[in-house]
Image 1 (cartoon, helix red, strand yellow):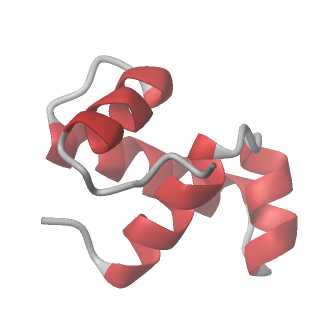
Image 2: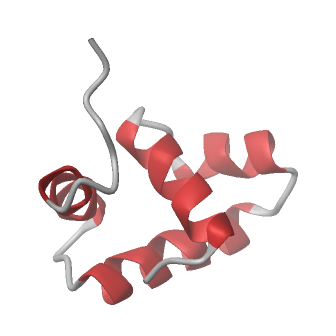
Length: 66
């Protein structure tokens, strides 16, 4: 469903990182980070980044720590 890079970005989204923070962490530009976020939203059928993270937890793509 998601590429390895998109899954990596999704995990950072779940931690609340902004596009700028994602870019710094991944060594990419902010527009490229935003492109990854948009691709995740489309692939998951989400309305926004928060919805994408919620769907990821519902679909058990991400696990709740603790």
